[in-house]
Length: 152
Image 1: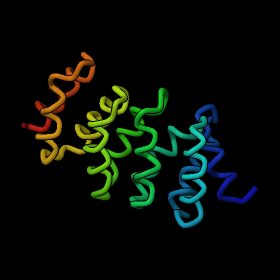
Image 2: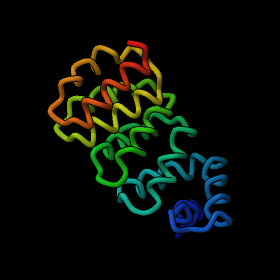
Image 3: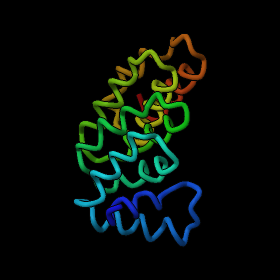
């Protein structure tokens, strides 16, 4: 196991802070080594995913956006993925969130709305407006809240 994989695997959500905090710091200090391993582990959707999703926006690398967006309809990691895209500085993250508003999955639409609220970019107002009549009441409520928070 490489040093990067050792640190990324230590991000497991069951790890104690004395283990995962230094691992997270190492990943942020060594993005060239950690980032590819983080994307591989993220694709597995395992117990490291939540912490990986919190670190990827801090790295700011555009190649993470598709991997994060792929989890928008994940039954466990959808909201963390939406939040991660909302915090990610790359413009492709905003595009991924807006695109997810059209997915069949209500989890993906709700997670995308969460990310748009996190991002605070009112350029998404028109896309969000279409969800105020969504068939899913949770999505409708989230759309209304998002429109309000974005000042649309």
